Length: 211
Image 1: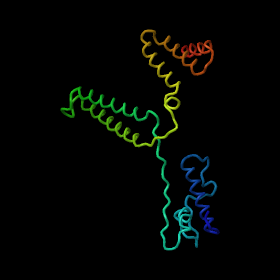
Image 2: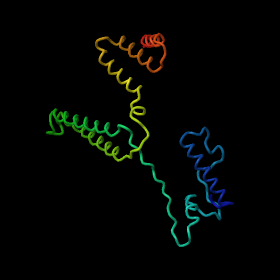
Image 3: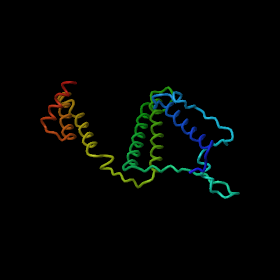
Image 4: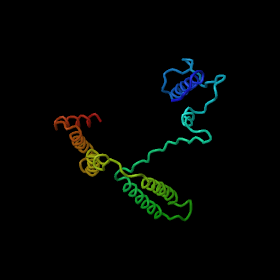
């Protein structure tokens, strides 16, 4: 709490109202402009009221004894937690990018900037550097999260969808687009909605017909 009153308190109130209203107005969240309500963009300091740079400075230094410098209050950002499987995933991406870099180098080597493999090598080199930075940042994160790999990262819905997409990619050439799409939609709708097979079949066939 701040022990202020009179013109100084009114100045702080008007300043807060102006900053809040114009911030929302400039961001596009307000239907009307603050000018429609007589709110000025800048609030002039009234005569006899000392200019204030921030309301927190008075609170922080109100109880500081004379002769001592007030301590600056800093807000520490919470350290992000490393999610389950995040480090192995980033490590796998780094290894895959190294393999892509090796493959790009095998095209024509790095004999000249105009060679066939120059552009692929440059792109894959950037991928290696960025994936290494991501892995380093992930390893620096703190541990102790309450999330689990089974429930938060790879739940049953994600695993089932991934397996069905892979199965459809394999069966697409043998069965064709229409049968594969019907089977995919039938199994996924049944798995996610738990409705009857007849309902899932009707929705699957109707969706494919509409497409």
